[in-house]
Length: 416
Image 1 (cartoon, rainbow, N blue to C red):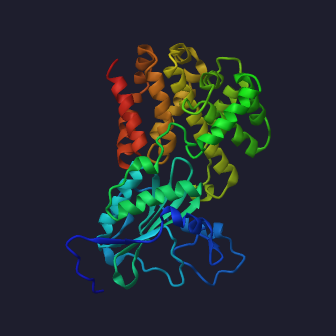
Image 2 (cartoon, helix red, strand yellow; image 1 turned 90 degrees about the horizontal axis):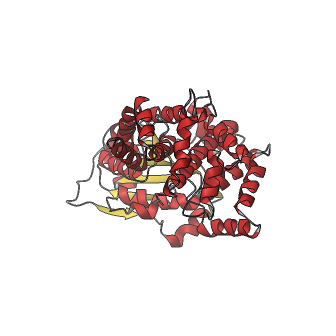
């Protein structure tokens, strides 16, 4: 195929993704939700009874966790797929008026790393499936633009918050075009993985608990939720804990942290968090697991429990209450065989596949390392140093938040 000569400096043309178009993006276009999934290779002979979930599952099976641009784009511009006939391009798309497919892929991967968004790749279709720390999931695909005008980059939301997805899309598409991206505008770098909860909602929750009398009222609400046998109630309970242990949003972070660490008598909360952290991984394949509700619920609870634990340990450490953290050194639930520390070390050993979980695990270790020199020596003897170095390399490739936490932890280890 004959390709037009490159200009000395590539110019860029992009579709609408600015705030005035947000309503158009969130609404339906031609009867199809812009956030719904449409496969890259549509088969228009599919029966109407075939669900989008089945189509998505068939597509997800083609993705691997390899993390290099060379594995994502198998060749040059000519190797990129054509846009399928009758395929409606998402509004979250852009055309890069150059033909450097690998260079465009490199810029996208660099942006994903800065935003701490992990990805799995399908080199046969020049596409990736991305997962953010706030559970937003989406596809990124590269196509040959119509009439060989350049490279078409398309993002398509698969799951999660629409507004968070738009922020990610703005940053990724700008990066694909070679523009400077301020990651702080695209990602609130918070310890909590629920950064999408507006501050106004958090304030309402805190004011409600304050009107009811004390910090114990907040903990009573949480206990009531986690004791229910409904998955939606338990998820709401653990998300409430995540909010209450967040120092920047909660009026009672120390009380919540003490409850999670089992200091102030709220054993039900501590046992619940430990249960979620020890929750066994599904034996299903990642592709099938994505469509199994129980497995997805288990993974979400596990990740949120690690975030709650990280928040609690950091709150206890920052509140000049090191006794709370130092006391864990004598706890068999933490330091014993198959204890919490062993689970956190296991998360680091799987940082390549579960970077978000590893990030929260390192947050926990940072608080533990900062508590006492005896805790440092104990963790070093259990091999923490080498695991942190391995996780640091993973973070520098694909998860900037993980890299930052590993840098801080390794700095603490040098001060033994």
